[in-house]
Image (cartoon, rainbow, N blue to C red; front, side, top):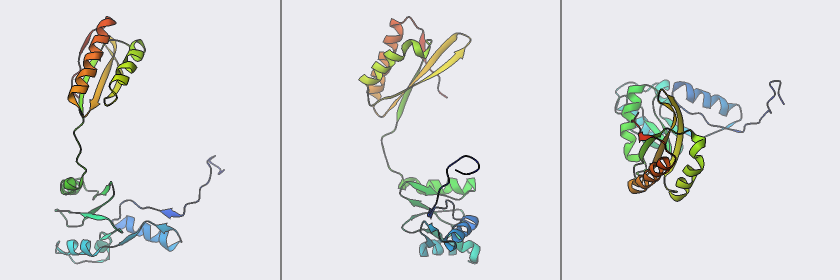
Length: 195
């Protein structure tokens, strides 16, 4: 145990997120001091993209061409210094306008999946008053994620119940079951406002 009361740890491999001017230097210092650093190397394609910017390639700019081995480059239409992707992790520039442009370039790299749909209902019931019944609804609709969020409003305490999933019909069935359950318990309900 250390003086702060936490167990000490030994690190052998270091990963540095953000390999710009500062991050690349940090990775280099760790490597010189015997740590295994996640493979960072000068990427020839990244160098070519930097050259398109028309600025001289000094040591600081070349650091922006160091990316993990095997990473896929992400186009940067603003400054030409590419970002990169390693599996499901994307690294973009830290300047918001450049990050937005890089995100637009990365959209085709994203895994396409069905959209997640949602519906929300406000029930003027306390969570504990219907938790068991809500669990039964969840068990009957396992592909729908159901969350409950208590509120306190001038009209009284209640709960917003949120339903999420890829299948609109399944969500609608779960919402109908909630309305029926609330009616049985004598509670007022309404479709929750978005936002």
